[in-house]
Image 1 (tube, rainbow, N blue to C red):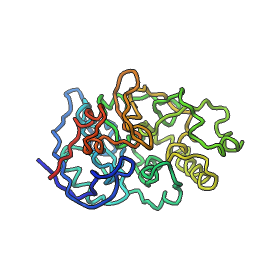
Image 2: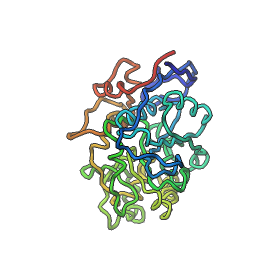
Image 3: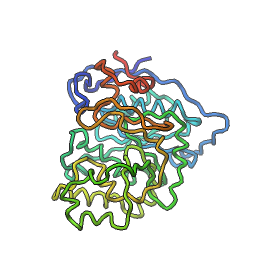
Length: 332
């Protein structure tokens, strides 16, 4: 079965700018039905607030829709209890178009869409190393505690360019302890390169890390305690650093550095298997890369090279074949 919807064409664009153009028809195949195993907990009557649910937040937009659909497909395929997975989709336009499309592709999926007003964040965004990192939806993770229902106490945030090859409930069960967020950390990375010389030369700025042992972490895969986030007002703390950035240019890389400023050194550690990132290459060339050593539960095409674009250009990287296994896109 094919579902046809009009969206911008991606095929002729280079990886960093795969957004917005003319509007030929896109079509998506209907996903298989995925049902719970016998031992799965039964859902309660309240569909959103049930404690048996695994809550996952992602964004939906035209340029990355194909990636989001593949990511959801992979989550459901590898979940022991797929009917207990609840997707929270953040959009900044066309919610009335995305909802019937998702329902058509995933008839049994429990989900809800939430509108993020682009004007809330647009005047706080500064220029980045590539245009895709300047889009308002790239900052949606900052506002999950405000957008999602108060009864939702925890959420997994996933970027649209991931594939999950393990049961996501294992990630959901992460022990955050006293921390607000959990993510795989990479303490061997050169942390200083995520901020400008202006930042490191200014004691008030660099002093933000005083008393901490900050490590780099990728914000494309996080487990977030929304109760602690709301209590501590972290949305406003992130926004304050974005405002500093507008005046002083303390970093160059989109939405990541404010998270590092607020949370680095205070992150619950998650195994690296849950974010095998960098598969999209760097932010300029998008060259092919392999996974890091060790087991893999989630593959992440962070960087400028997206697998759907490389496949369409007939210049795929070896690992793009794994992504293609979950792709539900097809021309009408």
